[in-house]
Amino acid sequence: MSEFKLLVTGCKGRMGQAVISAAAAQGVPVGAGIDVGDSLSDALSKCSCTIDFSSHHFTNELLTESLRLGKSLVIGTTGHTDEELAQIKEASKTIPVVFASNFSVGVNTLFWLTRKAAELLGPDFDLEVVEMHHRMKKDSPSGTARTLVEILADVRGLDYDTDCRHGRFGDVGARTPKEIGVHALRGGDVVGDHTVVFANVGERVELTHKASSRDTFAGGAVRAARWLADKPAGLYDMQDVLGLK
Ligand code: NAD
Image (tube, rainbow, N blue to C red; front, side, top):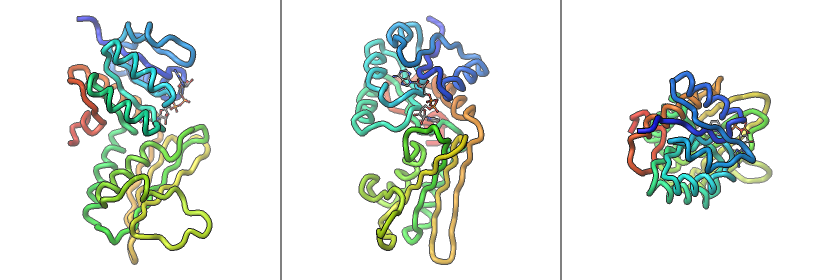
């Protein structure tokens, strides 16, 4: 059997560089790295699994080539359109895919705690998600904030698209119970902060995670690629990798 090797897409970026370091730290060989303008098929044919932290505009090509060559895929890129999300789901019927808005153990614990808190606190608590990231981040809200809102919406039986409100500006009226707020702050070099606020009259619970290094995401992504090596086709997330389900 040929040696397990990683392809890193978006290899010149902040996360791509962190993944290359994390792979070295975990003793996983990187067979190739590509960035804008490089050939995907040549690089992919030499590798066993791709770790992708590039751009959602690249997702279609990456899925097509991964399907053609039968390679597994770890997707960390965020900001996908609904169409791209559907393409990821479809591809995972044929190849194994880990798709996670966040690869850190801490944030996946926050996902778990958020569900528990929403179930325990019940419908009287207003729900708000606040995130902050560095000034270069392109998508908003973050993929992690979106996952947090999706968890809250799932517990409340609400819909992400109709019940989630991005900010509150102008004369928007009083808050309704059927509303989840999401607020994105951008500035400086913040790696990633997320807070879920559960607010009732007279009391408030806040769950916060703060990432101070990209190494936590990169290490998790390499761990996910190793975990995926003997898995059948399917769509997995970091909760699967960490055994939290
Ligand atoms: P970045 O801008 O520093 O790096 C992205 C890299 O991808 C750049 O080098 C860019 O040239 C390259 N790229 C863009 N289009 C490409 C293409 N078509 N083919 C090949 N390479 C291409 O960004 P970043 O901070 O490293 O983040 C990358 C992505 O990862 C973003 O979507 C971000 O939101 C996401 N992210 C996810 C997690 C997570 O845990 N899931 C953590 C951090 C960042």
